[in-house]
Amino acid sequence: MKKFLIEESEKTQILMMHKSLFEQADDKPITDEQKLRNAISVGCLKNGSLKRQKSTGRIYYKKESVKQAGKMVRFFPDMTYEFEDGSSKGKWSCPQLAAAAATAAATAAVTATQQAEIDSKIATEMKKNWKKLETLKAEGVDLTTLDKVFDKQVIGNVALFRPKGSSTTFTPGTSTVDFNNDQQSFVDTFIDKGYKLNPTRLEQNSLVKVTGEQLGAPADLFPNGLVMWYDPNKQSAIRGGENSILSDILDNQSINRTTCRKNVKDFFELYRRRNSAQVDPATVDRAKRIVQACRDEHYGKWGVAGGKNVDEMLDILSGRKEGGPLSTGPTAIFRIK
Image (cartoon, rainbow, N blue to C red; front, side, top):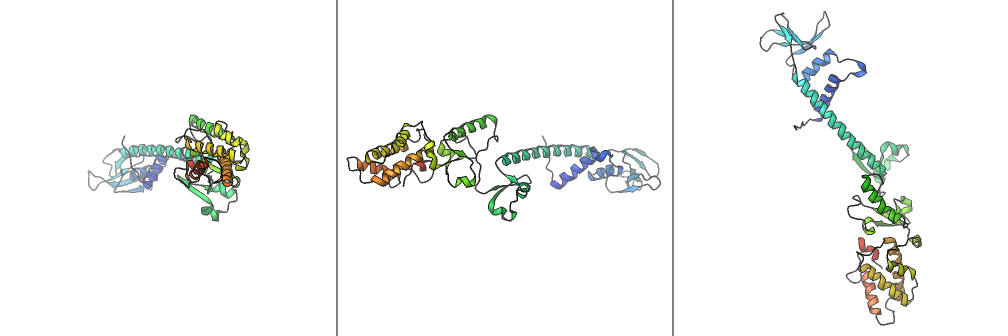
């Protein structure tokens, strides 16, 4: 299919002509003058000028005959012509008008499709807490600090704003039904364990952030990422019952040396086989606090055979020796101080 590359000014002109040719504003017909001006705009009438008969007020286009030099021809809006000397008359045509109208119609259809796509994108982003400028004005936002407080994106010719740092990485209803159901099912699993999705910025001050990667989300399930939060002070309500090692540690919170040796070994084993174990960061964090307390209390003072091995595990978990969890990334939840 042939494509038309149209400059914006030309597109506007064609659309205006298309409107004047095929639409009636307020039920008024297109004027005779406009019909002739349309023919001029597409090049059918040139090297002449618009005139009006004094006796009848009829408008026409006057130019010299191409075939008969010196004779003047009048072109009328009803697509007829006549020589001023009365020697000839007939019909004239302008194929360019039909071609221009077809181009205008195609351009208008493309523009409508593009606008529909833009409107759809804007609606999706507004579900993610992006707002239009007029909404911020209505809410009384100080517009003088807009660039400092809000992120900005422009879709089409519409600017959208959202407070900096309030990224919403998952919003129900912004994907296909099946894909959204898969996303929601994953999120609900962790909400049931006490996690929060999209807490307010004020709430975030007392919460711990974990990513979808840390939660074990499939890489392609949340293309825009996933962030959830948990309250470290309410972890007693968050239990990862799927993992027996974590359950043992959480059930044996005593920091006497005997229990601590087992807790350190269990936690180290959990880190070692982390890729196959079913864990969630909140539960790991709670177990890590117990192991951290054991280290603070008993490091280098186990007093029995095998204590060196326990200290070595603690050194690996704290990054003092190679092979331990990194301070950032998916393994960071296992790193102690």
